[in-house]
Length: 304
Ligand SMILES: NC(=O)c1ccc[n+]([C@@H]2O[C@H](COP(=O)([O-])OP(=O)(O)OC[C@H]3O[C@@H](n4cnc5c(N)ncnc54)[C@H](OP(=O)(O)O)[C@@H]3O)[C@@H](O)[C@H]2O)c1
Image (cartoon, rainbow, N blue to C red; front, side, top):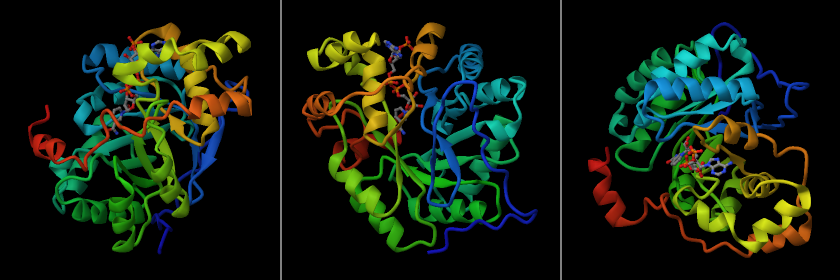
């Protein structure tokens, strides 16, 4: 498996850690690229002015990884915030996802170039195929080509269940560096994690606060106990749990105080008893990331 990019000008710059500013840790992907362990999510921030303000706030707070997608219709706003933040491009880690409507050969490539223009960047740190729908093999080969040309530092998938992930790996040259999946207390992706580990695929956690079910989680004794012991909020305990479980969470908030709160999770750790109690909350059922469900696959072409 060829994992190496070959940028014509000799490769892309290494990600620069922001040590000294936040205590943000990084993880090394299978191709050697360093990626921040926690990022800022932008799903459902469709108002472009609000999105630009939130991303600006997140960068000021210390986030260096920003997660967007073609299907969030806010890449322009993210790009405006990135270009005005005053940081060197090397300090930022920009992630976007290709809409499965753009998965035909050639069209995927064009859509990634269009995303780069909207995001006002000359390269992207990570691009993911958003869902395993439509012609994702053709789309993957477009991503591989962009990666080998040095325009993308890493490529990956999202919502790929183990069978789809392994099959994609079997019939292509570059193994996905990342799989972004739904992961929170009620959906801990244990089986999928085993397969990702086997192939060196790093798991990102979306909906890390439980999205629609978050309020239920905030009042659980298994969450409130450590929150009280460490002087943290339930959201911080839930994010810490994912970090200690090996996930890279990308919480979203439109509130400055919460944006900052969600980043302050590197100064405490949960002990093994607390981790076990939180692990026991897993139901193994996804709220959102279940593309293997035919009803979901049937509805996908009509998603707005
Ligand atoms: N790949 C995929 O298919 C996929 C799917 C879904 C999401 N994602 C990505 O993952 C990111 C995160 O997922 P998500 O946005 O769906 O859900 P989430 O991060 O689990 O939850 C977001 C919700 O939690 C609230 N919240 C945030 N911080 C809080 C805190 N400290 N205390 C209390 N409430 C808090 C937010 O409300 P306020 O905004 O009002 O603070 C928001 O309503 C997305 O933004 C997106 O980038 C990817």
